Image 1 (tube, helix red, strand yellow):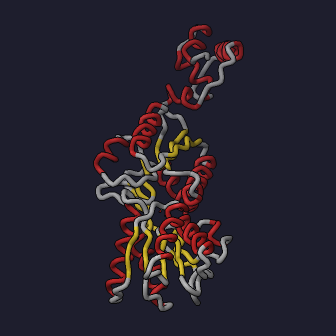
Image 2: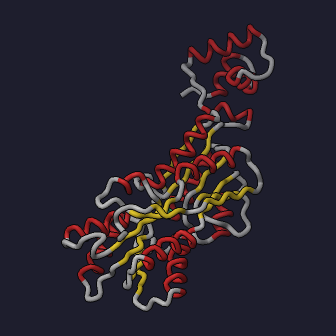
Length: 322
Ligand code: RIB
């Protein structure tokens, strides 16, 4: 594949002249410009945005690191960032990290090599100092995690969100309440668990428990099969996200357990599908699309410090008793 250097050599000009022609910036004599364009045509040279940025230092690209695009919550965040990026003339490299540290590290390296101008980072790596070290000095906005010394992050108060869900279950008379948590290495999962635990304790409930989940449909399904076939089945469940709530509903249906008559369930995220399942899912809403948009916009300004906090909201549907 032809390179910008080859174009420069064959046109008998410097790389920066070729770059000026590509970027249509700065003065280039008409004759020289025509020569460069004709060499580019002969070599079938299409400048990538990265090549364009070699001299200008700008690639108009950003990296978007998310754990898993097959989870609609992350897909919505990604969509929000991408739409805002396109509007601003940027393009996006989408990277799925699969909640794995090695993949995060690998992608951060790749994005640096591609000279992205910034990164929107969604991950739940608990160790803040290694995370900041890996990101280095590329402008980065963190979504769904709060950092102690950090500059840019977009945040939802998950402890409060968990409180809203738990108080709802208590208010409708649930006495045996279970929280299915997210993965152990997840920052937001920890905060939701803390919000749940604090609330049940404050209300003096003694029949409650937390079971380990993983934010997946299968995780919610497996937890439900165990909980609902046990001696002390819950009458109220707060799932750490909607995908696990969907798994729970499927298992309850298979076991012939009626929702919400026998057990009420509340999810977290309010992804589009929450309205479509049966019964429609009561959940805690976080504005995924808006979070993604805001992330790109604060990244674009490259402000050294910018924190945006959204409030979670209880969305009542039919999976909880009236
Ligand atoms: O559904 C995925 C979950 O993981 C979301 O609730 C989000 O907050 C993340 O941490």
